[in-house]
Image (tube, rainbow, N blue to C red; front, side, top):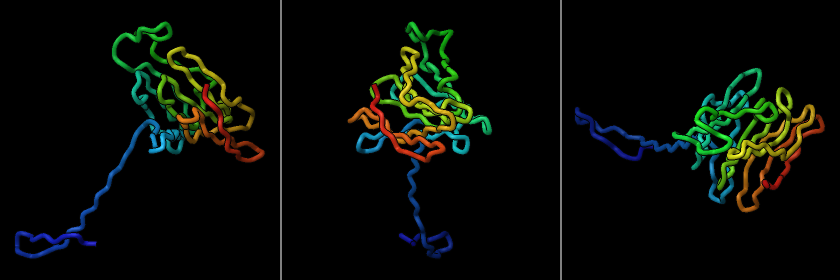
Length: 181
């Protein structure tokens, strides 16, 4: 639909169609108006290989898009300078553990702390949900993995400090919620 006319150099008048598009893209989770933080999906068909920085924090999540082997991740202390930590140092800035780093389906940065929730598939991973406390390099099991189970994060809700996720198994698909400690 034309919204204006312009005159060209030959004196002719043509219609102008102005299209305005705002495209918001982010490698990390997006925050909605009500405070809900949407999870980032990194399954092989939508995985973006590389760093996804923590919003307002010193860490990044590195996604390895390994195609048929799923998506693997590692956590990086990515800020410049000495981490000044007992668990991170200038020569030790990368963390992976096979319990939570293999066949990752989704993740969400938890606001107000250096934490990230990570969900895995049971094909090459453990099929569980984990809270990674980055300052301590500690992994807390939020949903224990079971053979044939896959977990997909949906959102984090700051008001209730809870995660919404879906568990898929041979029995079907169920939506669950867990309070983040």
